[in-house]
Length: 233
Image (cartoon, rainbow, N blue to C red; front, side):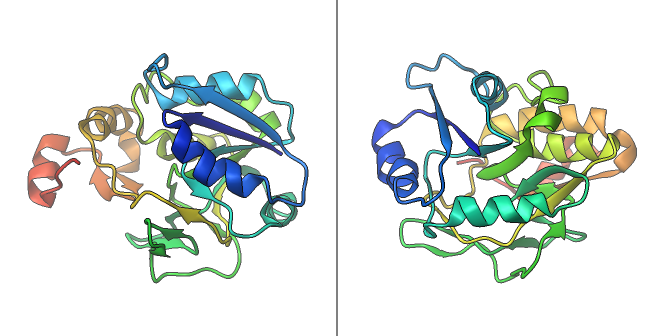
């Protein structure tokens, strides 16, 4: 298992991801991409760079503020992944067939459940959150993250889910326990700038689900945004 993380805050990285990884019982490969000087302009470009340095069978893309509460997380997750049919990508939070988010993880400084909607077995996903997701190495080599469609820090897992399904693979939400320091609501302007790219690419889907809202592909984002009254951080 290769764990790939792009970070911009060394203290957060040390206090959360690294400190929890030190307790893991299973061996892993860690690849850190330093973006404190803003060398990379998008998550896709930074994570693609990190993935090229990896050797693991599975590539785990994690935010710097992920904390693994289970010391056997890597071992248990690998077993789950090995038993998933046509696995293209798996995540720890996402949507299944409606607007509800499903996940067993917690978020925030004082961690609370991300959602009341829990799962006890892997579920086929219609979209995934970017906080942590996993792609088999052989799949990623064929289909890296799309730097053109996602030139910012948002929606790259959403794009990957839709794209990998078109290639005949499947996306899953897996039941797992971990914590995410962020409240998970990073609705910056970059989200709205990237969203039209997905609308155009996946127009025939008519609807694009994301963990921060669902969007029609045939109505301009500006109009839908006014209706939803979403405001960026």
